[in-house]
Image 1 (cartoon, rainbow, N blue to C red):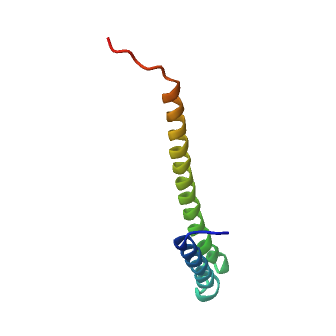
Image 2 (spheres, rainbow, N blue to C red):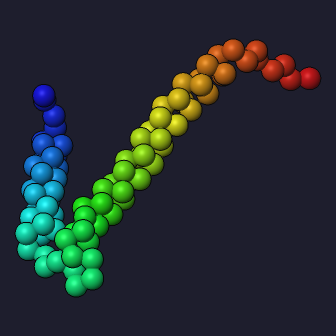
Amino acid sequence: MSGQGWERTLGILAVFGVAAGLYTAFVYAPPDAVQGEVQRLMYLHVPLILVGYLAFLWSSSQVFCIYGVVIGGMTQLRTPPQRSV
């Protein structure tokens, strides 16, 4: 898989960030006094939800931009020229 230098760097940083987050959530953080070990799942669950929302918003905006240009261009091609009176 070939990618730009910044894409590869961002991927490596993401892997290290995920590894550090998992270590912090499941090894370093002490269990909660009330919920115990189950509370540690929030350390993983909440960031994953936020990343999912951001990925959805980014991908939907990209699709809108691509199809908006394509559909707009097709509409422009099919519209007959207006005659000035």
